[in-house]
Amino acid sequence: MVGDIVDEFDTHENLYKAQSDGSFVVSGTLTVRDANRELDWELPADDAVTLAGLVIEELGRIPNVGEEVTAYGMTFRIMAKKRQAIVRMLAKVNPKEADE
Image 1 (tube, one colour):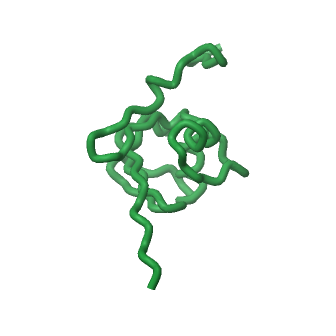
Image 2: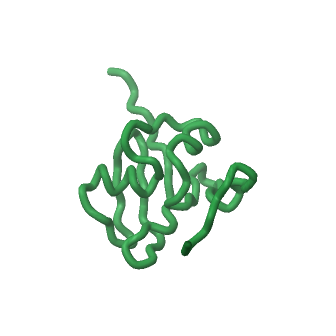
Image 3: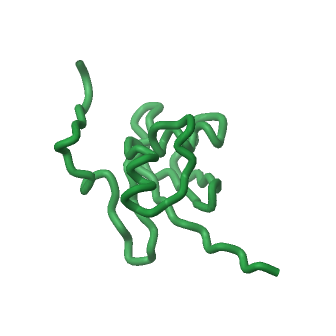
């Protein structure tokens, strides 16, 4: 086997980190389910398992470093990749538009 093995005893402290502006630096391997539960987000957990998978699914391709994807009321900016894998992103919740 190659790569990191994550189990239920691992902490998520290295998978996301809050920033002073309210955004989060997140690992591409953070699961959508855990992000929703721990960060109080409301991302769809139907198809994609990880945040990287969600971004790739929304965009329809693997994004480049520096590219931004806006979906589900959030903006994800790709910060780092390793080969074809998204390693780290900056995620921020977009302000809700006021009802007119």
